[in-house]
Image (cartoon, rainbow, N blue to C red; front, side):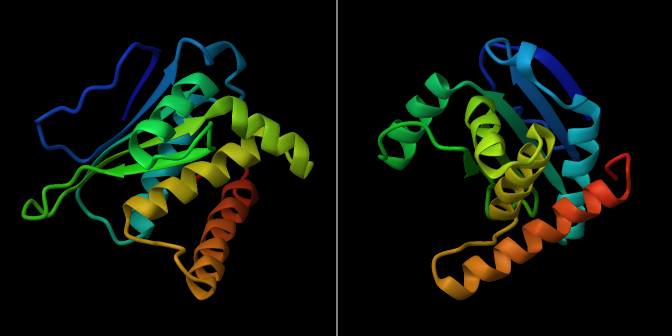
Length: 165
């Protein structure tokens, strides 16, 4: 796991390894409420518990401005969103490669709206994004219920274990 706080642009590495990298952009580093190592350890648990054995995944925390640009460019939706997942895997490699972008500002806004801690909402969004990379979808009500249940199980386990995973 590699942790950094100086993100100017995330670039995909061609080297295939089994790791999760956590990036926090300079625009939000000062408001990041969770030790980055905990996020990385937790993300590895979500990926491996989802049945993924080989992975090279970046989890990137950005501001609303960056997230708006990503959402409009890649999803053709207006405005910021909370989480976006991009599966960058080569179907023949057998390695999950991807990136999960989380708007830290939006996550903290949602936490306040939901009456939960910023850490809880961040863990929820990390889980949601990683489950999408692992192939989970919520294109219908049954899939949404299943994915929400799986997400909330990971969130609950994170906090019940006291130190994450």
